[in-house]
Length: 160
Length: 184
Image (tube, rainbow over all chains, first blue to last red; front, side, top):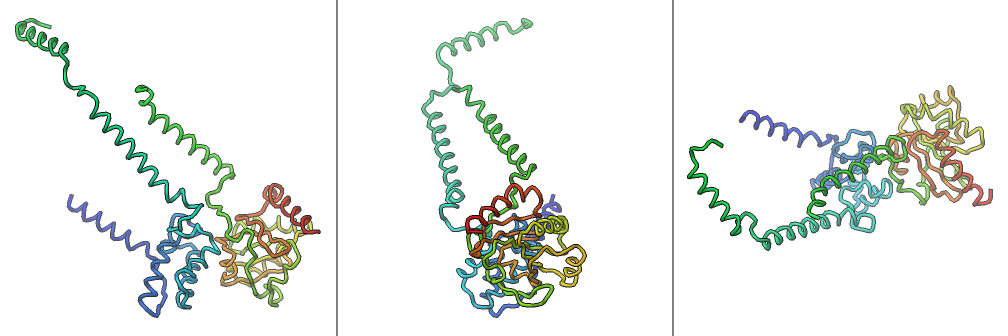
């Protein structure tokens, strides 16, 4: 068991490091490197749709990383870089898209579903509380049980 | 009512099953392709370019497209679908369709050889060796084709090889409309 756990955590470490693409890019400052990391994590590869730029080996992802590096070194702001990418690949490329008409459903659906779930849960709990305890016996049932128990104790020897 | 409630999970399952079945069916028939994203360039001007012509080496810029309804076809010799598409482009060129090629991230010598051997359907071929123009166009691979109108505005983008079906169903009507609308 302990071996298994150790193996699993090792595997997890491997997964965490494996998706960081290694490009030999030099940066002037650590802040630039940090922004680069942030961009490649938050931007989606246009070719392989469920990977970010950091995790993709597609040629287009390589090109976009090179372009990001170039723009960062040229001193462009985050806003300018985002606009540059969106102008070419659309908002599709953003894993963290801004809230607007097109993405409203995307952003609001989780809240909507959570509230529906909450309302249903509340209704169920309320109903359970107000209903009489179905496990409790009414007087008729209690009389029957008493009778059965009595019969049972007197006829113990009788085969069923 | 109580009994009906028991069926809710089954109903939800059935609805989802039908939904996924229909989507899967459409993917199968090609009516829906999750890889096909709308181009960010639609109804926007074609990006500015200034690239050497693959064959002559002379610099080609946006002026080459001026006052023409043109197909801009991104291709490369490393791209198998381009090989499939190429004969059809030749056919279109023979019919008088204007096509400008963008040789995308390719080996220029191989590309020249390709055009020599298989024929050249292009008005001009831009040598986009580093892929910067491809990036400006927002291509994700090759082949990709853009339809540009007389004002230099991108009207349509297609990812994948152009063939008889794409031509007759989408491209030809659109091309005819654009040519007519702006006084052919």
